[in-house]
Length: 396
Ligand code: FIX
Ligand code: ZN
View 1 (tube, helix red, strand yellow):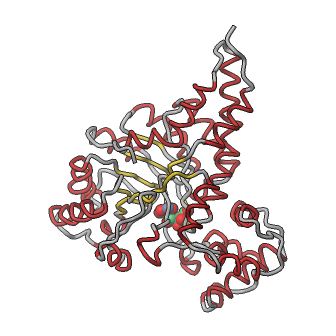
View 2: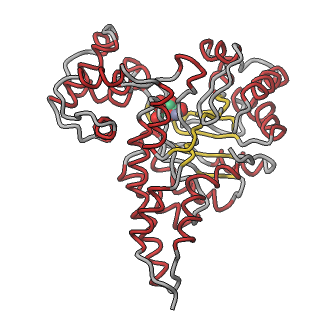
């Protein structure tokens, strides 16, 4: 009789202690200067919280944007954390961060938090946050057409080994849409050589169609996909954004729309020599994405992106992926924009994932197969690290 284990306890321990490779963030290595955001004022002026502020305050966006960052943070703290209960995902996340750092999450003002962050060394704080979060390394979002970022790379700075590059194409495909593919390819090759990206990435509207006469579709087919093949790296497609639904909210102004995923079918089918990391923003597109992942081994579904990164939806998406794909997907990325968000985003992912995995193993036991601790370690390591590492064809 195989040794029976306490499945829930072992899953809890393995999920809690297996380091994760965070495959999509907006964090930057300290070597890339002031691009990297951290600290209480950045945590509170996160666009998720700005959107929530305008639902509970009489301030107009125009008035808010005229405030200094510290005044914006004070207003968000008072409105969402003092005058109201921080029960939303994004507000509870800040509470979790403050608690994890030994600060009072019920404070009436930001005096204690500001003094704490003011006294920190970023290098030590970075190592501490990665340790608390259980994150081994992160992938950045690197836009070579951002003049501030280009200047940092041109200065010859090399990112800390815990920060990997991803070559982000949004601005290239928009600003260079009239350029010949050969010219765009030269730019891709230059920056791929400089950044050594693990993958290239582009976010796409809910209306994205492939193939199509759209310039983005042409450049993907004629410049980007041949470049990815030659560099032997995947292309990440992030589909379903409705940009600037409310421009007054700036970064918080984007929305979501259901996409026609036959475009994913076309691109995976037509470009069999390419590999595709795919995440979709609409909850309604998730089941289709799982079905396509069963049809195309060069498609790796990843993450519960942006408006989906809430336990109620993460649970649904993760369960259907496990049921349809086994452990052959990447369950989550943090999308962290501020360093300390890693703490709550990965605590939430682990808290949601553990019982789902436990349930899967319990059903397996009921149907006749016991798992052991080694099985669980292997599965969680695939989900948290090695599915990505093998898909980008490099041990990151
Ligand atoms: O396109 C993206 O990488 C999105 O994740 C961002 O644009 C978005 O603002 C975000 O941070 C969502 O979490
Ligand atoms: Zn992002």
